[in-house]
Length: 195
Image (cartoon, rainbow, N blue to C red; front, side, top):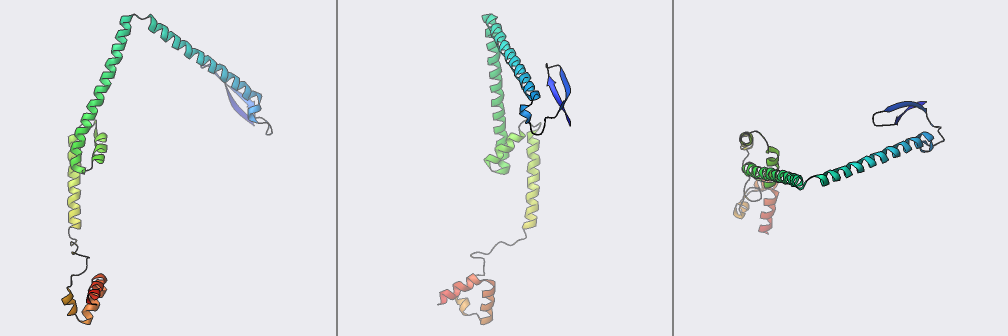
């Protein structure tokens, strides 16, 4: 079974050669082809390291050969770029804070408002997006009120019927049995109070 092996002589020249697979009992790492490839890789790595070192030295020489005025101009340019970047960061923080304040009225949670504000930052029309959210939120709230507004409010106390001790004493057997079936907690309290 033949395998394709790639050999790199230079960055531009790539050759493909057919190489027989090593025997099953001989590990791939010990084959002469692998050793040859490792040597090639080491040679190319050394050349790359040398080129990188030379580029660094040329850069140092270039900086040293520049006049003091050119160096000041370069430093001024770098300072202006840093100032511009800081200004953009502050503008973003200010815009996000304003958006967050607007979102806070919708969600009521500061962490959620900040997350939404970060996502909305840079949008073409943040106010329109917030208005759309507000309209959708209001519509959903109305729908939920209509859907769940028909549910009666829970009764006061433990949720069972409010029966006084006198009313319990005047109840007949069937009424007491019905009270025990519907509200066992109330029945238990009234029977304990009676004893």
